[in-house]
Image 1 (spheres, one colour):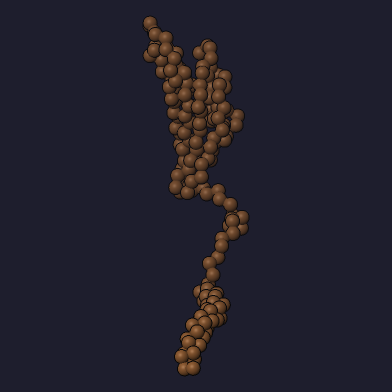
Image 2 (cartoon, one colour; image 1 turned 135 degrees about the vertical axis):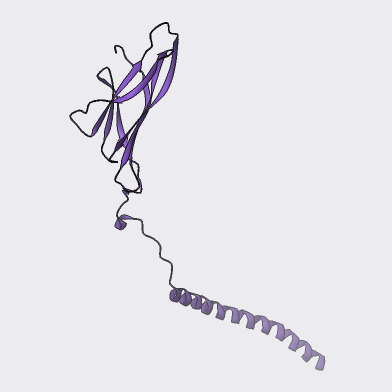
Length: 172
């Protein structure tokens, strides 16, 4: 296992199930393969000192015989049952050396909601009660009525006044 290996796009997700009792950690990434017929896989390494770090060995299988030279990235996936919050990091080892360290993401699930307490939520605007809404409507109506009545009276007076003057002129 001499030499180095090119890897990219590593991601580790650990999620609990709906009840929060069982979970699974999924590690995905890409490794560059440079020979035809070459395959790669991830295997669990003997646990280390820190139980919160999952150690995975990157194993590249090269067949014997004549091989063509190519360069392509192959996607690798490793899945393991877990408690849903067992790991903080994943270390990918190649030849006993860490080639990649990945932080484990713990997306929000129904089993383990990590929402803020209700006291920290944004205040919700309360709708006015029916009584307050009714009072508000009557106040608006009362404010409109005097203005409407004075407008109607002034229009009636202006219409009536010319009519009275015309009739008075006819009588003379």
